[in-house]
Image 1 (cartoon, rainbow, N blue to C red):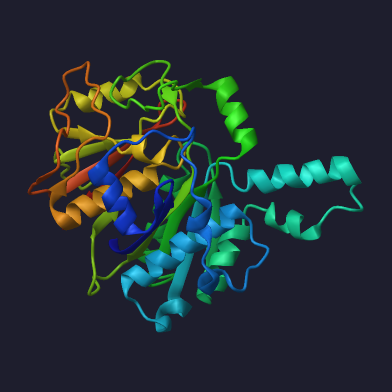
Image 2 (cartoon, rainbow, N blue to C red):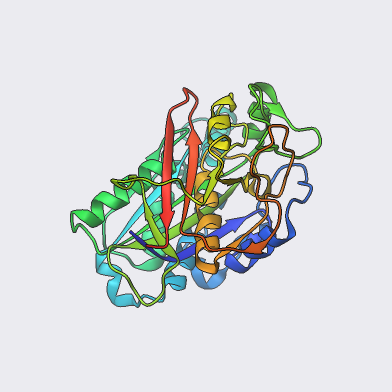
Length: 341
């Protein structure tokens, strides 16, 4: 698959320019979690037909819209455009609001609008409506590997000629309930720093939120970042870089140590975006940008007790391949392979 467009919205703003600037600036102290600024999800021109949309759907619509615009494809492709959205927790903020209203007002008095927004497929429906897309749409909900599953499905749709282009991305939100659950079930980093390279059995987290989308096509177009696949090459070679998803959300990270021992350059952008079970999408965005620019961006947190070949500084480089790696809660490993081929 060819990556022809990317859209992002995260704690430091919206768009690839803000993402590139964040990679250059490195880590900044969260306040106290990595929350998307309210002003970043205000865009009347894109959201004009969705006045009652919740924040989760706003993030998804804006990131998907920006990926479509970034691709440079015209409106004529909208009949052959598929949309796949990955999420770990879906619109849980809206869901809990709906449940609170039932408790406060009774089931006969709650808002049907809030109920409709509590459905996991609401966000992808808003994306299709905003883009006037008439292709297939689907939401994938899974904890550790929802974005990887979405990428696999996008690859299948293109291989089967179900559509010519696919908008595939992720969205997750950090509400008050999620903050509380993280504080009770996970180890929160008191200094605000996710430390990806400790490979701890009890890693620390800093909750985050955001959305990242890719427009992928089977054929090469006038604009292209890189190619991406969920399947390894028949004759796999060691990649130039590994980007690991160590963010403390999936339990022990000891298994990642074997990746560091391969000798390839290793990095992780999770300290910029925050702990999300869908943070894989943001590491893939960083990888695509590095491949397009042929430039390494330094790891934002460089605690390195195991003596890894850490990416320590921003520098031009000849980069042919980057693997983005995530281990799930039961140490199931999935990779996304990005190359210049």
